Length: 140
Length: 140
DNA sequence: ATGGGTGCAAAACATTTGCAAAAGT
DNA sequence: ACTTTTGCAAATGTTTTGCACCCAT
Image (cartoon, rainbow over all chains, first blue to last red; front, side, top):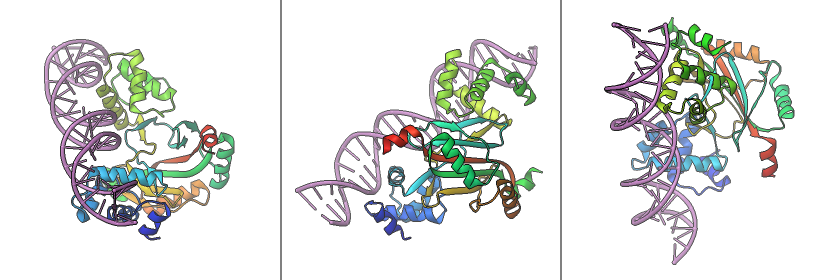
């Protein structure tokens, strides 16, 4: 789907900056922090400001074009022992509900979590942490 | 396991502040941001500084007592369509490797990802987003 | 003309660093 | 005693806000 169509479908006014931002996010599978994104957009629009990036991301999020996704920062912290960390987070009020580690088929699991918790699931994120082959070698 | 033992096992010098921080994280399943944690610790140690919190968290992380876990912030962003977002992130160099959505048993899936990617998995995080019953009602 | 978008600058907020005093082993 | 940690303050980095100007209806 073209960037233009995505924006129009979401009732977002189309501007060149917004198209560029959306295109870059798509090209990078969305795995882009604010500054890397800013640097990329700057190549095309040298005068763009960080404020525009932030405003655009917030706009996209509010319209459902983007979904905020975080890779471990210091924001929240967790006692180490449980290697598998599963939590249910309300995307509106941020309240959390602890859920058991899935041992069964994921679809069953998701239905189960939904009915136990009463939460209406909108999306899931499985983040796996590990060492890539290069770093794994360097560590040994 | 007692806080004292956890710290000693990790070869971390024991201080009352560190015990308090670790205790509070455990009592809250680790789902605690920096400021909420600071506020709680402050009740017991009114003079503790944010710098100490940050330093302690970083220390705990480096010793493996804590694992950084993030709940969606603006840090990284993702095009919406894929409801199930799975990524493999190298905990050392942050490089990413896209992985398919799991359709099968999780253990098989994890083994499969590991052998396909060459990454050595250290931990996984499944974050489910949704609306809690209260917010779900308010939205309708 | 109007409404909204942009970029700048400043404000607000979050995190990190350097250092002297205090506490731990 | 020696070393490390603490808390303060300042420095740095990040995100948000207000506003004047510009662009596309």
